[in-house]
Structure formats: structure tokens, C-alpha cells
Length: 230
Image 1 (cartoon, helix red, strand yellow):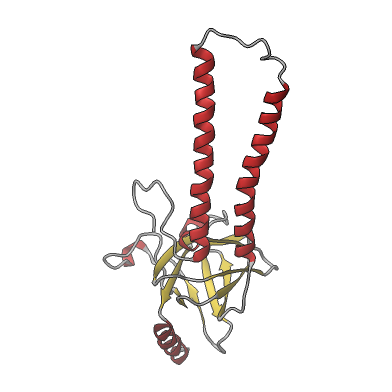
Image 2: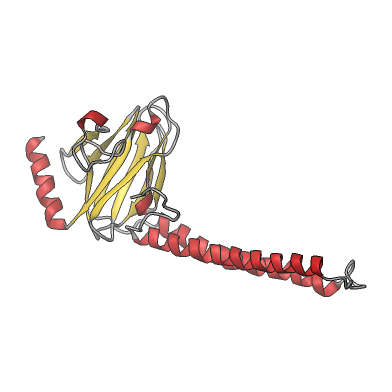
């Protein structure tokens, strides 16, 4: 999760987020090279007294500043399109979860099970246990098996919400009357935090999301206990 003075992204917890981090570094490197080149040209123009008689009309320069930006845009667009297709890909999910946004909490339903669902509310500050995070903890976590394809169906009961978990590279709008879907796979075990990312009313800041990725055996034990308590 994020920590004070952090400058970069959160550590990746899914293959898609790893690709997004690589693309971010790729794009920033291109921006850095362009910035250095422009700065060099500005300094060279300011520091020299020489002039070029063809500075106002040069066919060669016009070709360069037309072709070079086009090549740069292609180098940015191709990896970006690849990641967009990866994010939309849903290949035989092992588990489907329905996430519903409410004012102001989330509810989860594991559609592969007959009666497995719960509401997830933020834990009030006065009820936090030592080591828990203020405004991020919930009374029920969305538990998933790691290294398994997961599909999340996202919608809302009342107003617009947005289900987002940065470490997983996930953000999907929750629209009343519409069912959106997002797929991912947790590449490592852990607890990953997110929040509603669409302003949805007075308590928008108080509907966190907690995803806990565990080994498959632990998930099976957890689901059995939840079904017994249902």
C-alpha cells in the first residue's frame, strides 16, 4: 500500500499492474529524452551568436519534426494498446464475484456459491485494532485465491461509484442499472487496499475496499466457514 513520502506507484500485485509499471517507465524515458533534447536546443540557440540563413525555410527540418514525433507516438501507442487488450481479456475465470456499490459501503456476492455474500463496511476509527489502517479497514474483506483468474462484476444500487484497487491495476465504474466487468489475477499473497474513486455523496471517503489474496487451500477453508455461518 502507499506510504508517506512515496513518489512512485504501489508495488504490483498482478500481471496487468506489472505491465502498467513497465509502460510508465517506458513513457517517462521518452519524455526525459525529449526534454533533454529541447533543453539542449534552447541553450544552443541562446548561447550562440551564429545564425542560419535557412532558419525560416528548411525542407529537411520540416521533414524531421514531422516524422520524428510520428515515430515517437507509435512507440508510445503500441505498448499502450497491448495493455488495453490485456485489461479487457477475460479467459475462463475460476471465480466470479459481484461487487455492488451502495451509499456508502460495498457488498460482495460469490456467484459460484449458492449462498455466499456479505456487506463490507469501513471499520470506525475507535474500533481499529493495533496495526490496522484508518479509513482503509473493513469488517469483511473480499477474499480471493491467488494465481487464479478472477472476474469481478461491478454495479451500483443508487448512484455512481468506482471500484478501484491500485496494487492490482484495477478501476471500474459502478453504474446503476449497468453491469461492468473486470478481470485480474493476484500474483502474490497479501492484503491490498482501495477506495471508491467516484465522488458519490457525503461519505464518499468512507467506503474502502480490501482484497485479501490467499493460497487456494486457505480460500477453500474460508469459503467453507462463511457458508457454515450463512
